[in-house]
Length: 198
Image (cartoon, rainbow, N blue to C red; front, top):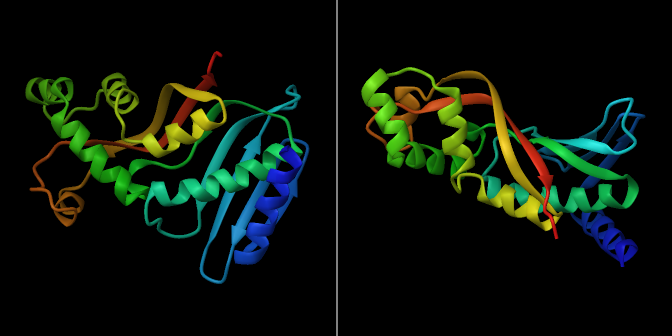
């Protein structure tokens, strides 16, 4: 059955675009490309690991939506799953501003979060990493990705982030908000994942 799924995935990609696979001792990457763009799904591991534990997804263009990308992530993941042993512990698929559907949900979630708004009321425009992570993790902001993880038997356990700031007033207004909203933004976001117990 696994072989059939892999063959179907390869046939689909051959019909719609080109896929290039590169494989080294510590990385297995699939590049999906056509005449206008490319997507890369990579699985990585350390020298001491026998399985691939880290997933990374990147785009060569502005995404329409994370929900749109999930189809490609899933297709490439299925192909990788046929060729390497995967046991994920972490993932990185991009930060909120990279996906129009995610960033709107992200802003709305922080605007509605009583904990975040209480923090803003007390401390103003001040970062609180632990609270930011809590709001992201406990919400449906990244629901399409969480659903994909669940499909492969994983769940999000925690997150970490780097390179922080706040969404600019001009960006907020461009998205239809007043521009006065105080919304923190990590420019690097990592998911720690674990297996779903049967």
